[in-house]
Length: 420
Image (cartoon, rainbow, N blue to C red; front, top):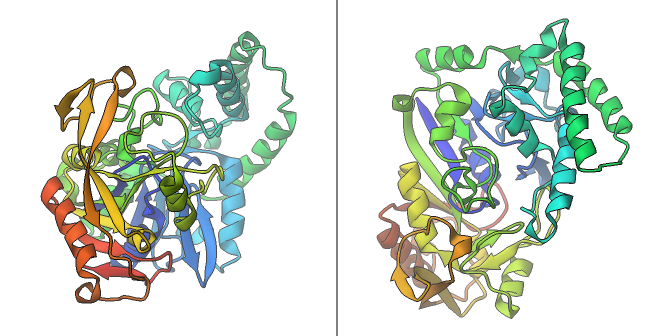
């Protein structure tokens, strides 16, 4: 049995906490796509921990954590992350497994990412510069190196061959930065990676499923950043939607049961790209301040706005979402009035569809006002105790999307979550 947790917006929905909350109900947590551009924030023993590549079940002793083949893995980031997790008494060599089909991010991938973004100027995507896009390009171009290649004697030769190809591309970009220090730490991290549990991921996970184990597939980024269905070209380089579970772990579609989609009670976006409900005013700044909206990976301030129900309904549709989990509802506690986007004016015409190419259109959100609850909800533990106006807000969202909110997160703590 496989359930999935994935983002329904532009990432940063708080998936890490949600995976951590549900993890005790599962035997295996498996990351199925993305790379170290993910920033899944957890609070363990009152301390903030940000996981970039290790699945968010890492702090549960009896939970197996699998990095699937759909992920692109930075060995340097992984080594540092494992050291951080070990400070909490977690033995990653016991419960962390990595698919041998997982592609590796090389130092030259990071250099190519930076060089490409610099060349774009004002048209830059807003990349995290972690080398993720170039690594996925090598994957689809059939040039990439995979974790399983580390076990072959020819790895260094294959690395040099790919590095030379990358160097020619960097020369075309006129990229002059010295990356020798990056390479030194890369090869040190490669030795550490070899010491971890490298497995045949698709057999590993399917044998566990056949044995009756419960799997939670953990996504990174969000549906509106999906390479196919997101706000292209301002997207990530992988399939962030439910289909990515199958591609990124080697699981058949009929194995998937619940699809739990995570959305904030409002909207944020990091980097460039369309954002119809963005608030570039005092209200947007207030959302940013109250929600502490700064990127967990980059530290960049997030763009903030009202919840976009057109995008949310679209994300529920393409993912087959069976339940919605709303995070950061407490951020709206101090607002006397709230707004929800219930439609678009696309080039002056009403629409409830996501346009093919949002950047080619003038899009204005159609906003519905609702009264805020103006009450501190952070200590509330039961749905019945939530303010009536918050329930009305949630009920309206349920009616619009056709999928019910099953849980409401009302604070960053592990226990600050209300079952509806």
